[in-house]
Amino acid sequence: MAPGELTMVGGAIDWGNMDSEPGLVWLERLARHFKYAVWLNPMPMQTWDERMYYGAQTISIIRQLFPMFELSLSGLEQAVKRLKVRR
Image (cartoon, rainbow, N blue to C red; front, side, top):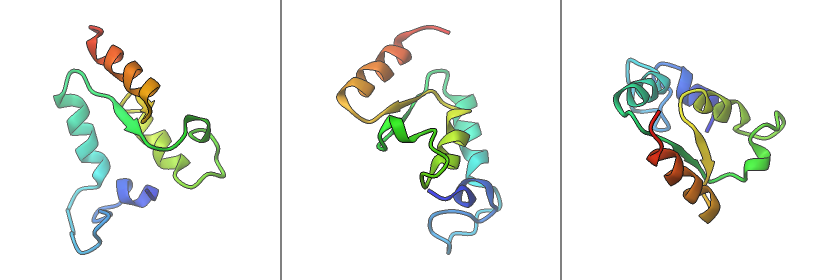
């Protein structure tokens, strides 16, 4: 996902859908609304911090809002454990 899809007004993946708010605003609302939430990332965890990797900036933005886990059996287990822990 390109950073503009999160940060730009009308930056939805469907450029014909001109929402008046950036996608990031909607993710912030989700994070505030749901007491327990995680983000499952299908990309390998070792690529999340690599600045040369496409999507690293977007991953960084989302990680500021949600605990992020790799979409794998191990990552799912970690995510469920995180969701079960009270803050």
